[in-house]
Image (tube, rainbow, N blue to C red; front, side):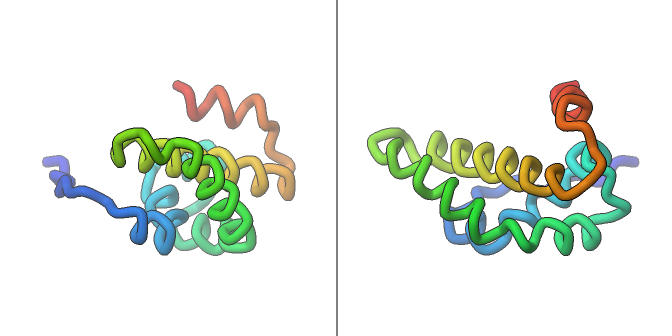
Length: 104
């Protein structure tokens, strides 16, 4: 019996403080980036958190006229790409393989 995920709105503050946690709870993300578990993922992404958050915030500022939902999606999308990209550069992972794994 699958666990039912509780749906609720995530705020910008939560995304900024817990962004890599949200990323790392996604099984596909963990699998494609070769993480053993959520903790391993969060610890490995921590060095890139501040830089990727700043980059994501700058990207979202250009969307200030758009609905908040659009801004949140853009922030999380940018954060996901940035964290993955920075992490991959420190590993033997092949970016194209990770990309196709994530898009499946």
